[in-house]
Length: 274
Image (cartoon, rainbow, N blue to C red):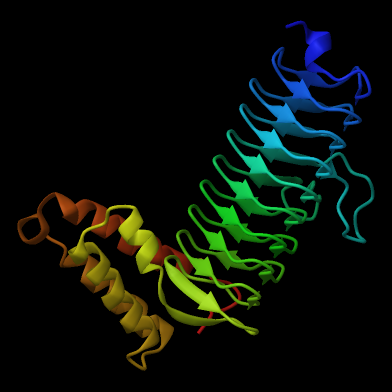
């Protein structure tokens, strides 16, 4: 198949765009200058991609998505900021992904292996990790950081500058205005913590002892009446008790998970969801 057959004759591709030779571009799509798209990617009909935007390999972008557009921040003055997207992402209908601002790192970044369902919005300067699922109409305000393996339920809204820790989960219609620690499930308007994402842990094949450890960590923060600083001190002590003799090969991933939970608490700048 020739390059001309891969790009629909009604599509408009700027001469300054760089597309791998096997990128497919659908009817009436518009790809602007300073756009780079990696091998094996598919751009559906009526998609608009503006630059500077770099898109990795094997991504699928469905119809009417707006990718790499200037942000909605009133401070933005058309500075040459960027959108960076990794590999193997699925970006569904009418998703909107905006570039960054110079008030942050001039960059919005989305990792790899993510599913962004229809009408998802990722605002300026957001950082989204790998393997996440953002369900229909989930919305990230500016400067939001989302870790790996996160699931945001439909119509979840995340306030600007919030951090959503890895492997956490929100229920549908949640309004997240504070930081969500790793592994924690939240729900409601305003969102409150409702335990751990245990089902997500089971799907990853984690042992009962591994899950029990994180349940104990959760209880220290949410059920013991401790201050956050007191709870973090106990989490450090708990990590020190994870010996190879007691837990075998599982001690290393258990310590890593506990560190991830503790790191998400230490990184909080808005206070955590309670």
